[in-house]
Image (cartoon, rainbow, N blue to C red; front, side, top):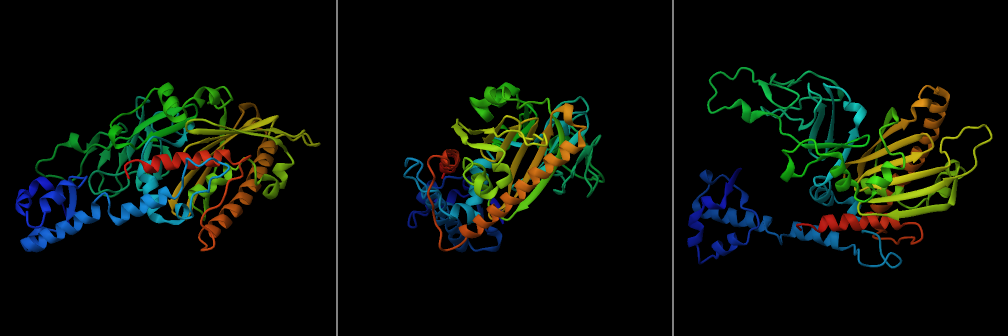
Length: 435
C-alpha cells in the first residue's frame, strides 16, 4: 500500500461523468490509503480509490457507528432522570479506539511519580494504547520524555526502570543520549541522504505536578518539554490545583511500594466503581465500612476533577489507625485517583489494555516518620489489599453483566452517584469532538 496525496492525481478533476472531482473535494483528509497503482489498470485504480474514499468519508458507516454509540448517552438529561451509558461503551473495541484518540491522546495523563526520576540518569518506561514511552533525567538533571522506539527499525529501546547513561538499541546498537540525540548509528557506511540530527528520539511533552509525572501525547505540542508546574496544575486539575495541594497532596511523602492488578473489565468499570459515592462500601467492604462514617460522605465536582470526602469512625481498640480522622478521594479525569487518609496516600492509575481488560497500578506513599514501622506498614497494606481483591471481584462481575444481552443501560442513584455522572459527561464531551 502507498500513502498518496490527492494533489498527485490532477487527472481526477476531468472525470466529470463520474463526479469524482466533487467526491474528492468532500474528503476531510488529504491523505488516503490506496492500492499500489503500478499493479492496476487506470480504471481499476480509480475504482479502488473511490472505494477507499467512501471508507474514510466523515459519514462512513464506521464513523457513524461511533457517533451512535456516543449519542446513546445524553448528558443534558438531569441526573435524577438520566440513563447510564449503554453497554457498548464498555464492550466495543471500536469505542476504546475512539477513547484513545479523543481522550487519552489529548491533555495531560499521569504516568508515574517523581521519585522514579529524582536523579540524573534515572528512567522508567510505560505504555498507553499503542504508545511506548520512556521518561528520564538527562545528565544535566533535565526531565525528558520520548517515544521508546528506535528510529532505525522500531525496536523498543528500554524496559522497566533504573539508571542508564544512554539508550542503546538491543537490536542493532543504535545509541541515543538521554536528551534524545542520536550518538551512534552502527554499520551505515554507504548510506545516502542521511543526516544524524534528523534521527533523534521523538520527544513527548512532559511535566510534573506535586509528586506526579505527567505526559501529553497531543501531536500539536509533541516537541515541547518541561512545562511550568503552575500551568500544568491549571490545565490538569483546573480550580482544584490549590485545593489538592493544601489537602496534603504533595511531595513530602515517601514511596513505599507499587502493586499492579490485571482486571477482566473495561477501564471505565473500575472508575465507575470508584465514583459511586461509597454506595457499594457497606455491601462489599464490611471491614472498610466499619471504619468510616458513611453518613458523612459528600461529593464535589469541578472541571475535570471530582472529590469524595468521608469522616472516619473512632480508632480501633488496638490503637491501629490507618485512615486517620477523614479520607479524601480525588478522581482526576480520565483515569487517575488520589486517595489521602491518615498518614497514607495511595494512587490508582487505570490503563486500558483492551475493551474488556485493564491494568490498575497502585502506588503507596507514607509519612516519612512511619516508613520504618514495619508492623504498621504491613498491616495497612494487608487491609488495602483486601479491599482491592473485593473490588476486583465486583468489577469483573459487572463486566460479565455488561456483556449480557439482558443489559443495555441502567440508572443513577442521584444522592450518591453524582461523581459517576460527572465522569460520563466529561467523556461524552471529549468523544463528541471531531466525530
